[in-house]
Length: 191
Image (cartoon, rainbow, N blue to C red; front, side, top):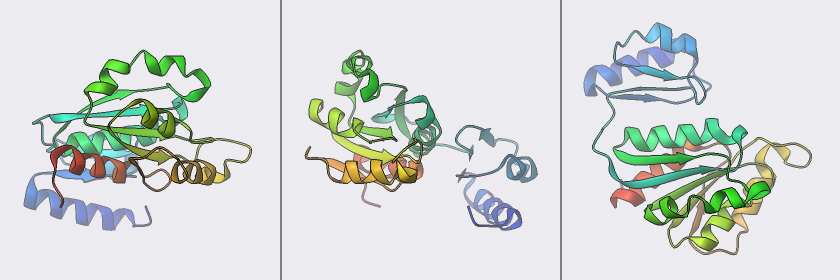
């Protein structure tokens, strides 16, 4: 975001020519249509364009969403991690308002090496997941919510103030950053 369409097209085409791989986040459908890379796919909900992803499927990263309105950010995280070569499973709508739904996925949570938890409103789900799982949890606050959510600040502060050890927090709506961090933890790569 913030780049002109022409800038994105020029940069993207240069990257793809050199590497035969491409991941663009926060892209418009116009950019996708004008890009004209045959193998590229556009994911409308998360606004991600991908081409040439690594399909090796290393480890397991589980992406959880508190609610349906968190899915776009979760999809950005999942697509990023998948693009980088990780096996990714996504489970939606298991937030604290219906916490019983989370426990139906206990097996996949236990199998995961890293768990990305995307939540808006009060941002409580990463603390709950961190309390029941012995995995690294990456909290992703979203700007969804109403009342005193303040565009995601309430969820961000809640996640930063969690008393559960082992929770990392990325910035508001930063699915891309969460996917990259989950990849590094999952594969043991530092760079």
